[in-house]
Each structure stands twice: as structure tokens, then as C-alpha cells.
Image (cartoon, rainbow, N blue to C red; front, side, top):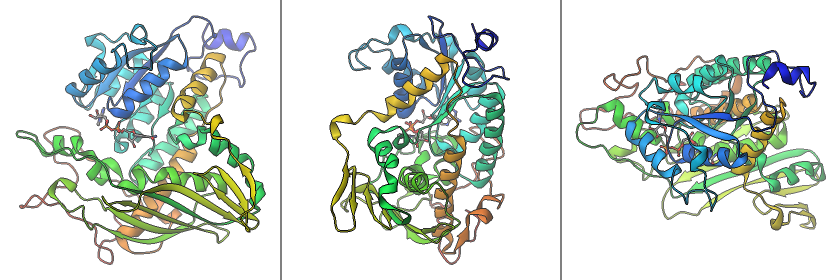
Length: 430
Ligand SMILES: NC(=O)c1ccc[n+]([C@@H]2O[C@H](COP(=O)([O-])OP(=O)(O)OC[C@H]3O[C@@H](n4cnc5c(N)ncnc54)[C@H](O)[C@@H]3O)[C@@H](O)[C@H]2O)c1
């Protein structure tokens, strides 16, 4: 009961012209493969398996064998999914647990739906392959770490559209009830004139170097601290807040300028990324997004967005809309909040099961990722940069050779330190 039968039955929301697998909604198994078996990969697999009873995990791929095995152990535990036993929905014998740089090529053909949850540097390559093979996709944000990767994702998005492949990107605020309710009422604040966005926190893990690791293995394991893999935290985390403002503006900034640096993130295990960025993004209509993100322990924590219009303000975290005098125009009722991570999968698998082509998140995912990359280019260089110049810069940070014995694109000096951007000196090249 795949494509042809669905079309013949007139059940499609849009006619299918591709080899993508759609389903009858009955007992047929929807096969899933996960590429990137770390924290988010595990979470996304569980959410996919909870979305529908007939979703089955059939293949797993990771750069590292130990990570595949650890993930397999965790997800086959009886207690992993809030009381629902999902073990019987996992059919991944050893021969379908792949590892190495090419593991994705072995796992993707075995599935109908592919979950892409590696560090974001690899997303363009993996997404391109999934689309080439006609798979529906759930992929995490960010969707790239450099402009060349964004172009690759946008090109693949055009093909995904032609093939009518559902693609959900893990910008989960777009699947969260409170944000959706605020978005539906955004006209209450009139025209948006400015916005503020924050991801200020203590920071994230460090995975130390151990004996015998090649430089490539070290960077792949401690990926957060390398721009080619992570994109810096302005991209890796703060993209969520930047994306909310782009979504509500229904637009992307035309230029950015900003400042940033590293105050406390200066150990050898801290690679090359900054620990704070402040960026002024300007949209075509002159409105401005002031964005700040910080990873410094002991400082004020705040992850939120504030959107200001001609008639009022939207306080996203509080779920509130007020006029300029502070009178409430809307208050979201927390009782109605959902788990947006689960919602992403519920909606994706529902569409696939019903034979609907409903999700095309790639372009917004790519352009919000590009916005965050633009912010990084502005803080690293200290220059004002336009979105189009950045996107068309051709900057490509990925290695030319994928092997654990190859040198990654950035190498430490003789003391084990990595080159760090210096505003005013660093060119456009990040
Ligand atoms: N939407 C959200 O709120 C949210 C939350 C957490 C993570 N994420 C995103 O999920 C992604 C993964 O983050 P994580 O926290 O799971 O990291 P993680 O380090 O826990 O897992 C990443 C896994 O990918 C594997 N990997 C690395 N390169 C690979 C390759 N080339 N092929 C196959 N596997 C490879 C690693 O070995 C590791 O097991 C990131 O893009 C992150 O931004 C999103």
C-alpha cells in the first residue's frame, strides 16, 4: 500500500511523483534509521517510536562504535520511555548497527524515515544523501555550520520538495503550543519594530582528550568546541531564539554587526569557539533584533525572546502579550503546554501515515541557521556583513578528507592551543 496505491485511492494531500514511501495508515511498518546516536539521537528515536505503534527502528549509524552500542543499550531498556515499553519496536541486530564516517550510507537505504542527529557540520552531507534516496527526514538544528553547507541544504530542499518528502527540522518552538498560540495572535502587537533574544547560560560539557586519540577523533568527540563541527554556540543553541524572531517577522535579517570573545573559555579543551556574542541583526524594513548569548558559569541565566511591535509586546517565555502600558492582551494557559519534541514526531509520522505531504521545514531551518552563522561571522570579524554576501561567500569549513587519520581543518599549535578569532584581524573567513 505504498505510493501508487495511495494515489490511486485519492488519499494524498498532494500528488506524489517520487519514490518516497507513504503508507496506508494500517498495520504497515514504517522503518526508521538514526544517524548520530548521542543524546538527541536517543531522544528523537524514542519520540519517533512513541509517535505510532507501527514505527520501527531498523538501523543505527554513528561515527563511533561505542556510541552506537551505548545508545542501543539505553533505548532497549524497559524504562526508557515513561512506562511505555518500546523494545519491541526496535529491530536493530548487530549487522544493522553501523559505525565510521560512511555509516550513514549503509543505514539510510534501510529506512523510510531518517533521523539526522549528528553534530551539525555533517548535516548537509547526510541530508543530501537522505533526499537523494527519497526518504522523509527529521533533522536537528542547526542544519549546517558554514555557508557552503547551507547552499547544499537549500539545493537538497528543492529536490525534497519535488519528491514530496516530509522534512521536519528540530526548531521545536515551532511545534510548541505556547509559541503557536502567541504566533496566531501576533497581530495584537501591530508591526514588529524590534526584538530581543537571549541564550545566556553556564555552558556545556567538555569531552577531554584521551591517550591514543588522533586529532580527528578528539575533535569529533569534543565537537562542541570546533566551528566546522558545531558552528559555535550562537548557532548551536541560540539559533532557537533567533529562529523565533525570524518566524514572527516572517523574514530574515539583511545584515548583522556585533561583538564577542572568550573570557573564561580559554583552556586547551575549549577549541576555538567564543563564550559570548552580542549581535545586532537588521531586517529589510529597518527593524532590529538584538541577540545575546553567553556561556559563562555564575552569570545571569536567561533563555527567551521579547518581540516589540507598534501596539504592544510579546513575552515569549511568559506566554504573554501586552499593550505598551502593560495591560494583558493575551495570557497562554500553561495547562495547555505540550512536549514540543514529541509533537514534532507525532505530526511527522501522522502525515506520513496518512499519505500527506505536509512538512517542508528545510528552508526556514537553513535560513535561520544562516542567520546564526552570519552573527558568528560578524562577531569573529568585528565587521558589518550582509546576509547575501555571507551566504554567497563560498566559505566551506568541512574537511577535504573524512578519516580518523586525516587532519581536521583546524589544528592546534605546538602548545596545544587552537587559533581563535580576533575581531579587527580575523577576516570574513569564518
Ligand atoms: N532541538 C534541541 O533542543 C536539541 C537538543 C539537543 C541537541 N540538539 C542537536 O542535536 C545534534 C546532536 O546533539 P547531541 O546533544 O545529541 O550530541 P551528542 O554528542 O550527544 O551526539 C552526537 C552523536 O553523533 C555522532 N557523530 C558525530 N559525527 C558523526 C558522523 N559523521 N556520522 C555519524 N555519527 C556521527 C557522535 O559520535 C555522537 O554519538 C546537534 O545538532 C544539536 O544541536 C538539539
